[in-house]
Length: 126
Image (tube, rainbow, N blue to C red; front, side, top):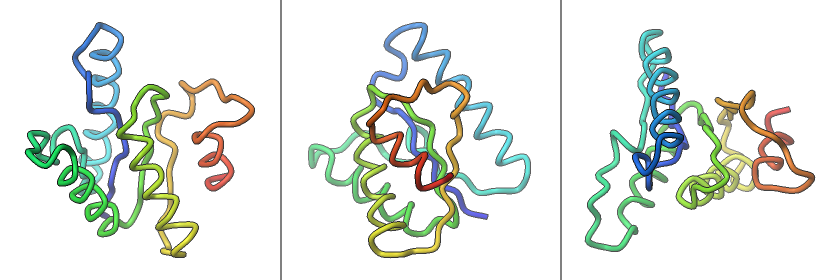
């Protein structure tokens, strides 16, 4: 199965908390790949040096998400790129009715607010 993982990229090594989060994400990715899944993990699989100012990153991730069977979400409130990817996922699954399962990868780490983009995905995934 092909999986696209929405997850934080920018400032991933900024501080100890971010580095620890990236370690947890790496373990998650490794567990999926050990089961034979092909995972597109943007921090590893999307070229981050982008002379277009981000257009190619957005395009590459959107295409990989379109090609994926499932979309997994590792949510971090501070990740602007993840929020963009979440908007793309929402458009694909809810607006274009593409049949893709969305999995909330780190739901045990999230404290849900009354209203947030993450809450939208809680609604979608049940």
